[in-house]
Structures are given as structure tokens and as C-alpha cells.
Figure 1 (cartoon, helix red, strand yellow):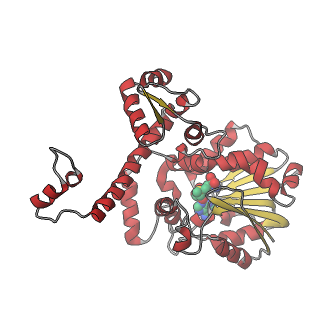
Figure 2 (figure 1 turned 30 degrees about the vertical axis):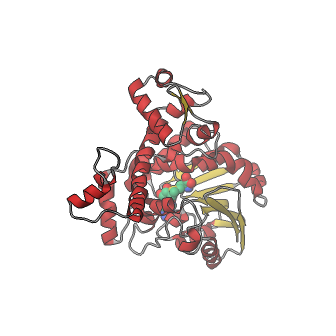
Amino acid sequence: MVALTTGTGGTTAEDAGREDGAPPPDDEALAFALQVWQYKQGELVSLLIHLGDRLGLYRAMRGRGPMTPADLAAATGLQERWVAEWLRGQGAAHLVTICGGDRFELSEAGAAVLADEESSLLFAAGAFGPQTDETFVDDLAEAFRTGIGLPYDRQGPSGAHRTERMLGPWARIALVPRILPALDGVAAKLAAAATVADVGCGAGVALTAMASAFPASVFHGYDISRHAIDRATEKVTQAGLDNVTLHLSGADALPTEATFDLVVTFDCLHDMTAPQSAIAAIRRAIREDGTWLVKEIRCAPDLEGNLANPMAALMYGLSVTGCMSSALSEPGGAGLGTLGLHPELLRALADAAGFSRFTMHDFDDPANLYYEIRP
Ligand SMILES: C[S@@+](CC[C@H](N)C(=O)[O-])C[C@H]1O[C@@H](n2cnc3c(N)ncnc32)[C@H](O)[C@@H]1O
């Protein structure tokens, strides 16, 4: 830090260089250091976003116009000095507008991304959790040595909850009204009486949305994560649904006879150690006139293609800490990772398992593409 200090009375970069005998940093090195420190800034802004979400600060600012720290402290029951420092940090990070007179405002766009969990497809604050547990990082470092990654459950119950909140908006808001009706004949079958499997169902957001909308159909959720299935059980019970059965098991536990009218796999094939076996199990379990709906991350077959994604570095971070790690959590795991299942590969895997019809849908989900695949 000292080497970056400039201005009168401070230690300059040149002084620091002379003191320790190192040459003064050039502009390129200074710019690089700034870039690196900006990632540290991102880590701490992320933590403040989590606190804002957890403490209801964004929700209390929604639609309220400019607020002083005292206003926000009164609205949330929190301590004014802490709220004031949080607001200044949020202003510095351009997440709230600094209005002058020690007042701060959450814009409409800010509310859509940081406060409106139930109604906004752009809601993102739920993805920001507490900083990673140190023993998890120890295990991750060890995975670099052994090659064997960590299953989702190693992230604990909060990992399943964070995934639920990160991926929830599209399943809750867009799946039933927008995505299912775009598939050939699927919504009509669901309205009549269909048998459905959600493989890798996570915390059950999609299952709950579909089972509530289509009470005449029956739904089965499969996941190998105990924490995810516990959370899904809680949600299904809370919603009072009696047409959902949850299974703490993977695709290998699917019935071997053709049973399902619809199978969905959302954001999970690339997390699996053996996606090709899961796809073969889905092919066996699906009816001849059934549909397999896949949601997978938008990605390309090569790094250059993936770099077009402005969030590529985030995606590779999610991969090392979650997706690729899960997909390598058994010896011989496929290890596809977050950006590993591109359209050409999915098509080849589906063909190899005996599916013959393959349609890609783009619903303007910035992170994902959807595929309607049929026997
Ligand atoms: C990123 S989460 C997605 C969860 C959910 N589909 C959603 O969209 O919220 C990936 C899920 O895949 C599950 N998973 C990984 N391997 C699996 C397997 N072989 N069979 C079933 N689920 C698996 C993980 O436990 C995790 O819950």
C-alpha cells in the first residue's frame, strides 16, 4: 500500500522504491496494481452488498427517494453510525446515488437488482454471501494437488441457499409463463396430467413453480445434495404441495422404463461427474413423445469465444469454487465446469444417448440458453 501512496507529506512511489532498493514502479505496474486492488475492492463491496441484503437496507430504501443515514437507521432499527458508513461505501461504489446533504437514494434500476427478489429477473443480491469459510479454501487448495474436487454439499446449507437465490428468479418468474409455453405441446400436457422429473433440482424453485401451476401433474425432484433436498422439502411443505416427491439421489436413480413426459435439467449437467451417464438415464426414463428441457450456461467451445462474455472471470471463479469442483468430485469426473457445456457438445451428447430432435431457444436470459430435446 505504501508504494501506492502519493501527494504531499506521504511516501511517494519513488521514495518507497529508493528505501528498499527496488526501482520505482512504472506506469504499467501501477495500473496493474490498481487493477488487482480493484478485485480486493470488489470482495469488500460484495460483503457490503450481502450485509445490505441481509439487513434489509436495500428493501428499506426501495421507492423512498433520498434518505439520510438517520432516516435509514430509523427505517431498519439499525445503528446510525454503521448505516452512515455503509451508505458512504455504497455511494463510492456507485450502487446508491449520492444526492448531497448527506442523503442517498436507491434508483429504480438499483431496486430491481438489489431489492426486488420476488418480481425482478435481474435480482442479484442473493448471490452475495458471507466470505468463504477458511477450511473450504483449504480443501480447495488441496483439490489443486489431488485433482479431486468438492461436492456441492461441502459448501454447507448456506451454499445451497445462495445457489437457490442466485438462480431462483428465472425459475420462479419466467419458467411457467414464458419458457414452458414455447415448447411443443408441453404446457397442454402439464395442464392435463403429466409425469415430470427435475434432475439436479437443487432447492426446488423450479419444481415448486411448476407443481403449483399444474396441480394435475406429478413431479419428482432428484439431487445428490442433502442440503438442497432439505431446502426443497421445506419449500414444498411451505407451499402445501402434495404432487411433489423428492429423492436424495442422482440421475442414476431414475426409473429404467419410459416414465416421464417432461424431464428438466437446469444449470446442473456441467456440474455432474458423469453427465453422459445422466443423459443416458434420462433417455431411458423419458417417454417416446416426451421432452427434455435443458438450461445450460451460454458458452463457447474455446476460451476466445468465452471471453466475449463480460462476466467470464466470474464464471471461471464459479467454476473453480463450485461447478468444475463438483464435476471432479469423483475420480474420473468429466470436469466440464461452468463454461464447459457448449451447444455443440450438448448436441453430441444428446445424439450419442439416442435423442434425435434438438432445438435451441434463446429467451434473453443473459446467462443461459435453453434446449428442447426429444427422442
Ligand atoms: C448449480 S445447482 C442448480 C440447481 C437447480 N437446478 C437450480 O437451477 O437452482 C447444481 C445442482 O446439481 C446437483 N448435482 C450435481 N451432480 C448431480 C448428479 N449427478 N445428479 C443429480 N444432481 C446433481 C448439485 O447437487 C446441485 O444442487
